[in-house]
Amino acid sequence: MKVASESSEQSYRHRIPTIHNVQSLSNFSLTDYDLVIVAYEETVKSNQSYTHLSQLRQQIQSSTSVLCITGPEGGFTSSEIDQLQQHDHVMTVGLGRRILRAETAPIYMMSVLSYMLEANDC
Image 1 (cartoon, rainbow, N blue to C red):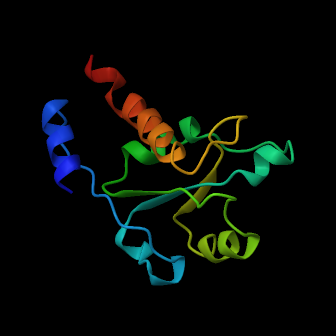
Image 2 (cartoon, helix red, strand yellow):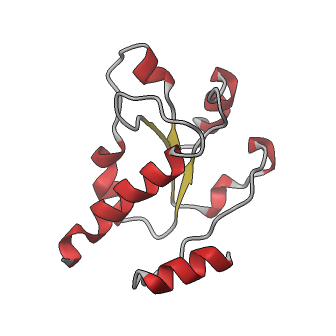
Image 3 (cartoon, rainbow, N blue to C red):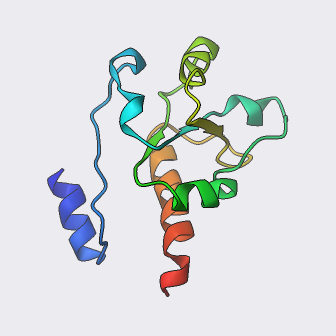
């Protein structure tokens, strides 16, 4: 949390993001958030049409608390996605046509969100 706080201060961010430790999905409370965004790469692998993170701008801007979830190396299982999608406020999204590594997907996701939410502040 100290890194998030110091990074937010350095970049003049008004809201400090909360970063959670790695947890199993069954131990995580999704009801604490207005919107839950899950990066899901299977749609990209199968060339299906998918919702890109940038298409959620309206929902993100109108939400007070947003949780972003990225999966482990190898991705989520279909049963994990089914478990997540049982909640109405959970959206699965693609992060583009590329499959990102587990350690770079959160950085990409937060960069896109930051751009979308702060673009009008410039």
